[in-house]
Length: 369
Image 1 (tube, helix red, strand yellow):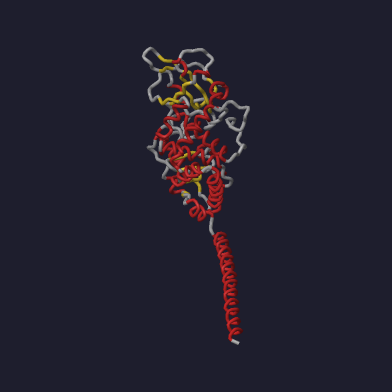
Image 2: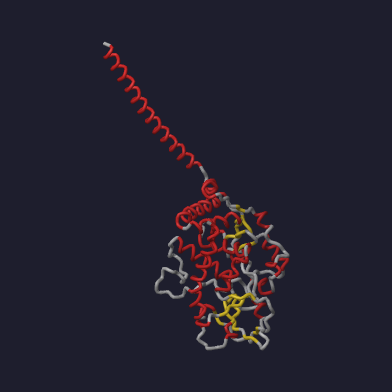
């Protein structure tokens, strides 16, 4: 009798343990399922801006009209550099008129547009985080430093540009954001905020800063198009000797490169030629320009061979910002760009400038990891 009672007791304990185990296990899975459902529901309720903040610690700063207007400063180097040709291209008679006009050149960024851009940036960062950690942290750092303003369609002829640490985007960009444009303008912010980080790169690409009066250039400077992303007109380019088939001596390898208006009274900002002007040196080492006929950049083979067929190649700031676009496309393995300097094109040898940029840039962003 005692034996059966003991067996019954042990079996009861065993059944209790087994039942408790399975009930606990079921409860655990039930709780986990509920947690997943709750997490899913919570994720669904989050706005894209909240996701950007949670997953990438980024909050995009969108400027309203009144805040954006404060970017237009009458005494700034940009506005004060507007000579007659630049005023004419912007349909203004004087700087006072231009100042008033440009202060009214901004528009409201709607809530829907903010959501569109936030989602675009979220998707881009998610991809970059997987593909290239250093580059991801680089892009994140500069996104945290910038603000974004919306331009009316006529401002700077609809061309995106930067003022201080603000990217002024065209209205179409807020409907269909372009990733290459974003990285192009981020590069301009970087160039402005940490200028010295590009000094060695520009030298490696053959550029030399020469803020000294060059005899014979007065008429050219009067036609130079003012660009807020590349204000200085004192950059020269020294052609790599192995690209120069003229057999000329070293002092004739220097060229002034820029975007100059076709007339002193242009009717638009696109009324320009991108040109190279060959410079000479006197016995004292001073540059001068003999007013030879300008060379159009899109026909100058040594320049194209070195830099590639880049449509925005008239200033080192613009050249490297275009390379920044290409680097992004390389990371994403995106071959949609028509820029010829693509490393995936095995038949294209026009990549020396981009190779220099890529090596330099990858060393630069090592510190961002």
